[in-house]
Image (cartoon, rainbow over all chains, first blue to last red; front, side, top):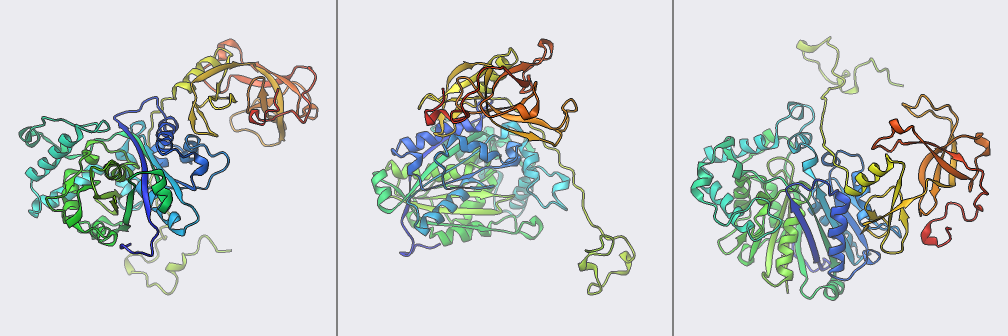
Length: 357
Length: 191
């Protein structure tokens, strides 16, 4: 969508997230009960006051059919609630909630998503999202596919190993201020990153996102309700998502046209972007995104450390929105871009532009 | 009905089959076996429950909101989305809150003759039903409100599993009046 007066004003008014390497005995219900109640309590709303609840999670990741139904125990679906679920990153659940708020029947929405990849093998789980006839039966792991993309970028001269190391370094240094960053370091050295051996050539360990367990909860509110709940709501000025072909072979993997288009439709306006939280599985993907969004030097990228520092399948995208929104709500920033991706090699992309008043 | 052995519609006369594959049996399915391995660790409330259950003790969880007791415990009051930490030990006696007579066998339970009675057992002190089988009497004697008691497996067969109770047998105590049987604690009508 582009900025238009015909849309209802909707804002993020409350966020809560948690990421850690391995949650072990903490199950998804316990994790989310804590985050959802924190998120509601900080703006003083009860579940009964929430008009719509939407979640994002994956049964393949949880290893359980209808796993999201169990997690509803953490919401409190009593008296019965209006609820929906997407088998996608929580950022896409937020999009559904935004649409619901646009319809105008409800004024508030709770959005949450979570993942516990430590319980299984994420490289196997992600292989099952590929073409079921020709690609998935070969079980290519997600990092190898991302490495093919990085190799193309390097060989075409679009990025360098140095630029990748700089991106990893930015993530680790920024992440040192973020308690949810699993891989972070204040004094990471560029030389050390350059000297790391490639584990899926050309990707070094630091070029690959640090897989983490975790979750995120967000409360959206419309118009006056948002102003009532939050002193400085993070208004959604534009939100859009687009998809590229599922067939890896037909795509130019050095680009992400769907990310470019989603940003354009969301009304990016790079001159007024204080910060951007972009979601990629590798340093090379972050470089593609920076180019697609045409970010300039004024925009600070991934102050949280981004998904390179802590990557929770199904929640990393929603956490990008949470990171931008929390900085706007606290007054640290005025306008920011949050990006979420899904699918191999930046196939599906969502861009959300947030702004304080 | 379509003949399953005839070629699919896409391979009918409209489509010209190349010489190289003409006469071959059309591909009707692709097999791509998937194996995903998970390593589950039960949450602490479930671990505590299963360990106690293997010692013939049934634990429930008491809600901090209104004292409702949930069994088996899941660490959360699902009505309010609130974490629960307080465990309570429950009796292995209760009453039948509701039941049905089932004529379908349970896979893997060859010991079970059909028809059998499955029931929501409302343990004394619990606010919700607990699923189990009722036996030790004729099926047509089972009724809502009937007092029952757990029949546990032999000591050496007990383990950290949900299967420790073989069935629930009638105690012969006076029945719970039907209007009070199977009620939820938050209705404030349970004993």
